[in-house]
Length: 531
Image (cartoon, rainbow, N blue to C red; front, side, top):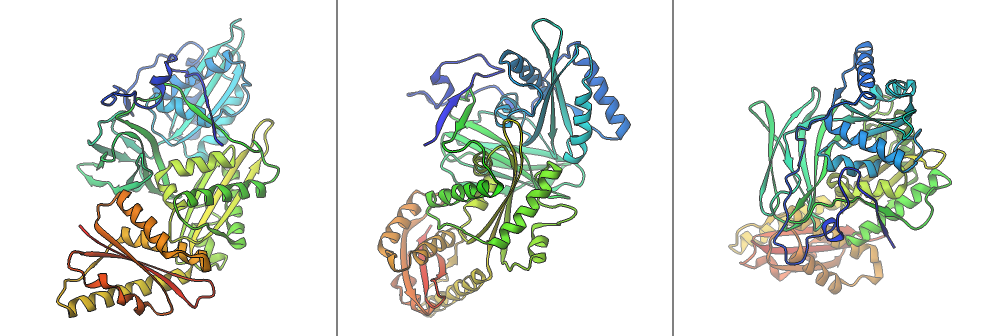
């Protein structure tokens, strides 16, 4: 059971419960004037001014550029004030998930944020702050910063908060509360050495849409459709850099619903801290397979060799304090798998720095791109590795999850392609037009075939057919009169007996094939539909 705890907002006054949650009954929608990545004003106080000068001097000395961000500064000052008022421990890293909400409320869309807080003398520069900069700024590839300071009630000490952020893609301002059914225009400029920007959108129903941005007139452009009704969408911008694929921005869009004024913190049952990295990895596997079960997908099988590769990568991530897919010593995921001599047709990876396995899993599921990896129907193998650094109150976990589609999947994919050709040969011989092989229908058919295969002698094809038809009616794609047929057979040609193959009111087909345990028999699922 998941409990919810509401914490008081830093930058906004408390509001009534109906303002902090979903859209009030009878309301026709919601709007707000706030925007992400919009310009903001900020006037530094006497305690912040010398720190700004010290950071500027540090940048000149080391030849590193950090750009002042006024929105970071507003949140940093409010957070320093909050720490003093709540009597929180100052000399530690800040709870990132709580701080992320405040940054989003201030219009910051950046995904990678590193905070630090320390006490010092009024109008002075704590030496620990510059030490933190030296340790973290370069290896984290940070591009922006903000500083906020607040004095103790007796005016004898100052609490300083430093926020470091990374921004490979600079977005034009975007509304936090766009209208339902609208098209959200994107315009982005990228730092040097970054390219191939892409947007991914997680809809309120849990579906993921995506497209690439196109370059024209000195910037990258795209358009995001908000066609899935009212609710909270999550928009993600990814870019390709020297260290692999990177999430540049990830933020919610409140479409037709009120923007919450209070953050929500998830409190989980079970241990808050784990004795060993292996215990944390087992929890991540449980969370992963539970998410796949909710999506009607079979569980993934852990592979010891993949776990070893993932653990070695997590060790390096913890040393670097940077969640990346490519490291100087290990190379890319493909390099690491080839070095380990693990065969694969396709491989995917999720990496994160988090306080707990639950927090890492939540971040994966909230990110459209990572969510696609976790719920990929073609994946059957997984390796999860965790590296852990103990803290006095909480730990830092580096998490790597590797997902592999093994070579036998390539064999069944070839069988599906061959069966598609044979279906169209039969249709042409009967004077019918050829059917297109639909990628989305094939994805659903493959999920269904794998569920039947995993259940072995307990497989119920009629119940599976009913469930698949329900998903087709409720899913994100439009289908007309869908029909489903399934076969347990040794030869794919058996599926050619389906009477729907010659139907005149269909124009596309989805094909999923999965081998049963032992490799002798196949489950074949065909999904026919018109437009």
